Amino acid sequence: MATPGILGLNALDARHQHLLALDSYKNFNSLPCGLPAELWSIILDHLYDNKRTLLSCLLACRAWGDFCRYHLYELFTWSTVNKFDEDGCSTFHPYPHYARRLAISGSLLDDDVAEDSNIEWLLPLAQHLDQFVSVTHLEVDSMDWDDIFGTHAWDKFTSAKGFLSQITCLDFCNIPLHPFQHILESICLFPSLEKLDYLPSHVDLGEEIFDLQSYTPSSSWHAFSTEHSPLQLPTIGFWTWFSAIEFTSLQTIRLDSVPTSDLPSLSSYLRLLGGVLKNFRIRFITPHDVYEFVESNVLANSTGLQRLELVGFIRQYPNDQFWAGEESFNLLTMLPGTSLSGLDILLDGTPHRIADSVPSRLAAVDEILATSEKFSALNNVHLHLGRCNKANQEISKAFPSCQKKGLITVSTSNQVSVT
Image 1 (spheres, helix red, strand yellow):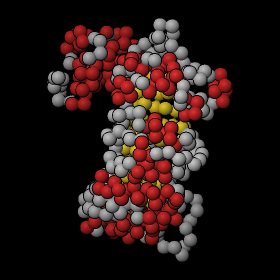
Image 2: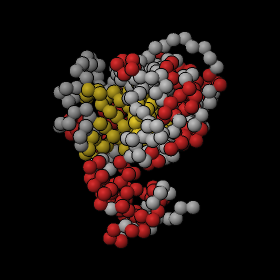
Image 3: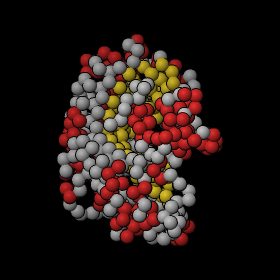
Image 4: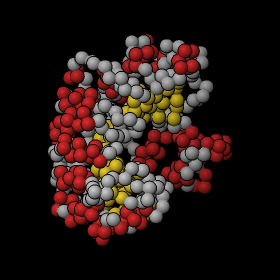
């Protein structure tokens, strides 16, 4: 059982106990200046991104070793060109037990590397996964499932049950959406999964027929994101899967622009999810996207929604004028319940002006946010502008009612100001 930290810093104390459990408990009895380990941890944390200084500290004081290695060896990357030596040791990662993030990089987007790489390039890593006892965050980049599934390396990787059970955060980057069955198989490998961030390399929608109900993900999985996708990612497969297995654990869903054809399946799943959903994010490319979202009544049953992030909900023009359409006002009126406490609005800059005959409803948006009983729990409206100029003052003036109640926070790309 871990002893309480003398400073009462719970998170820091948990890390302190983790360091003590590694291999040098005796070093903590000889820390310089008589300062406790927790204070030295805070001091050395300031050097987390300064590798040269951390290496110097490593040489200067043996008792600082674990604190320095904690930052020096946080991330370990394995790619198609890496090899272990004959003793099974990696010359470029002498302390795998310090790694907390493991990145696996394939050759999907690099034809030169792909031609030279061995199909079993993953095998040496798979055979030594038991050394990475502290890894909880796995990043998989540029992997072609068709090249990996069925290989000896993949069988070895999937048999590392101890390692797989450690993973709570999973990032899929530059991973093909098809075959979708392979995506589901991969997700279900991790029994302790809590967060998944998915960015596809390309979308190749082929017809797949398989039993969705045979794939059961971790019940602790509560956050799903595709917000970094640079294209309209078809997400219908995920919503169909979640609905088929009646998966109701997701509390956070963060999306980029969603194809109109996917909105019915998304709406159907969110109705199933009901009040479980706490945090939701979506991007609108055009005002018509907002209209389609409202028509689909996607958030009708999300009575527990506490944080909502809308990108493109308000338009910002090059002359620092702002515009919100009737569909934006209608989106607010369709939101259920009074649980919403935070609203983040990221303004999309656009060179195309809406016709002057279409009036802005910005004043109505301001009024409903500040005065409606529906938003009685709202305590912050955060407006993020794409350009750092006088526009932050102008947008504040466009929300006089919210400003009067002290709800408005305005930020730009490189500064934050509270108004």
